[in-house]
Image 1 (cartoon, one colour):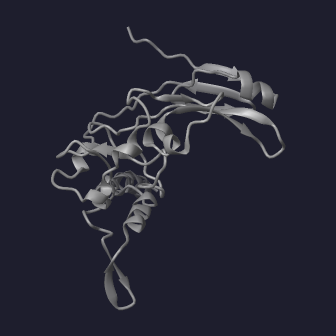
Image 2 (image 1 turned 180 degrees about the horizontal axis):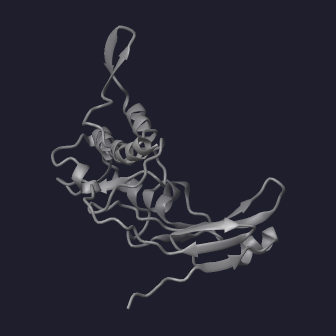
Image 3 (image 1 turned 180 degrees about the vertical axis):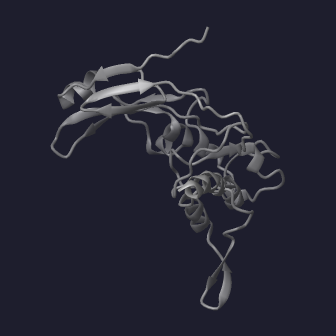
Length: 223
């Protein structure tokens, strides 16, 4: 017997203070909000074909040292800690400049422009991306100190690092080193690393476009 998930429904409080201080809701991974009412539902992908994982596109050999993250920038406390509560005391600047803090759950006091004080909170996300799952959507900030940046365990050394430029290209379905060289004037020069990451964060996934084209062609042929 198949168990069906139920749609979770809740109406948002109308007062900003009540919403900030007391609102709590167990969101699922999909849903909508209409007229102040949230509808949330748990969904699973209906796909059983091949999957390209992050591990499939990662380099197997030596990786330049510039991609590796220094130990002091990874953790500010025990690695298993995923939450920080700064409602009573702020962490130091050094502690807040670690990936553990950035990707962890947080609670900290803030003040709006109108003087309203509130508690800002956000949930934890996985600090190190798994080999056996597809890469997440890349943004133009990929590679920077951002919650959305991928950090991975190097396959050869086991050390923690950022994605290489070539890995970001392969995630988006481009050939390796697709963005390595660029023509400036009459010269071929190497594109800076941050620009290569930006280009891939701004790109569409080639494989997805290829699959969409097949279906769109069928529709156009029938018109």
